[in-house]
Length: 568
Image 1 (cartoon, one colour):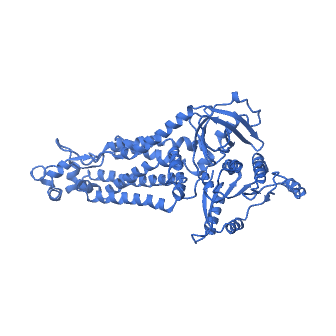
Image 2 (cartoon, one colour):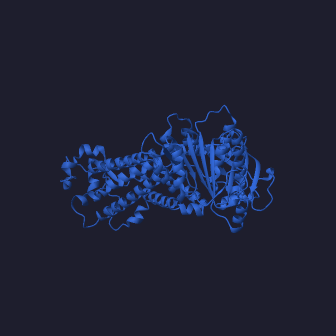
Image 3 (tube, rainbow, N blue to C red):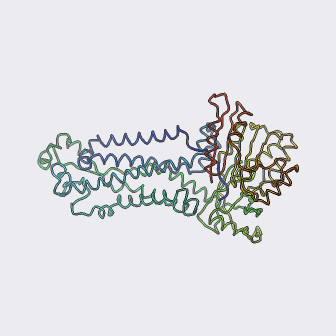
């Protein structure tokens, strides 16, 4: 799939430690409460410490389930990012790490769900064993409660010959627990990078099993398998005294038979708010789905890239933002993200799409970009658009110096940025904090330059006319060429314009030396805050992130590089 939206690499230490701190606090506090709470004293006699393990992990599971939907509420994040005056600097950048936080919370759900399931396996075995003939004393007495009228049971396994697995699957807690576990395994395994790259559609469909996950989680606790002593019973039955006189429970007035009940389910209270919020997100998407999108132009580039120009009533955007797009003729459920390549000043919005999966291949075929003649606008399939949504690239204008680095098709988000720069430079009255832009594009195929070279050429011409030739420094690197191309390049090297791009700035051949590039930028701007924005593969991302750390000064008054990235 073509395009990517820019996100900051990695989560801040403060955010991760805060999340871990809350999880540890909830786990330890709940664990200690169940280990000491008097109403669960008799439950602990049967289950031991695995009761506390199960309940503490359940609370943390509820907490993370509450958080998991918030980072993917795109409209909420875009609203906060665009309107909150307190959302500046580092806090603003945290919003751009929403998917990384979403993944972190998912790991928290997986870990706590595993602990919860393992603990309940031990609980089930202990319930079962306590009904055996080997159980004696208080343990046996507690397990036999409920066999006579006016008694409430504590042990849900009523007889030793019972098949515990079969018995468990007859309960609400057992069935929903199995469904939750299967849904979680399916979601986690289909979310791996390998699956997303091989079949994005599989990832997209299986991820929507989350609906089953949340429904099952909400009703899981209604089974009330784990039970504790009621408050009325505690006022009549002194546990400290009566636990040693269990043989007299039927006769002694000071030790009536203890009564038990299940704990009120609470998972729904944790997830109700985020589920309602996410439901509102989907309602907004459905409303936008109904809005008409007019396709004004379709361009098929020789490099196998489809360019779509569209219009939509009330559509407003900022450079670097992205949209979610659906083509009902291909799939009525799938929405795919594409970076906007148009500038806010233009009277249309555009995307560039390259084949990267079944959906994009079907889209290019539907628009006649696979060798057939392009269709007339009236015969084109209908498109639906949701968005636009915010991304970190909009922060380019907030730095005095910005370094924009693209690899291959990762250049798409920078198209909107460069167009916006072109328009802002044309508007003399528009003050800019941004005073210098370094643009790097690394590409292996000369065909990829075809659709982007015209933009660079017009920008180069405009900068020259405005006397701002030093505002933008761009460096294009070609990493792949054949022998014929090399001969052609050598023969025309002395010409005023580049033989490949037609620009005055000549194309470089090979890969950039990032040490030299960052060293020179740091030298040119010794006391500046420099934003580095990257779109491309992970291997290069790690290199650039390392360069940012290495060349940032330890002196607060020195140069500092701030890294922002998302791979596609």
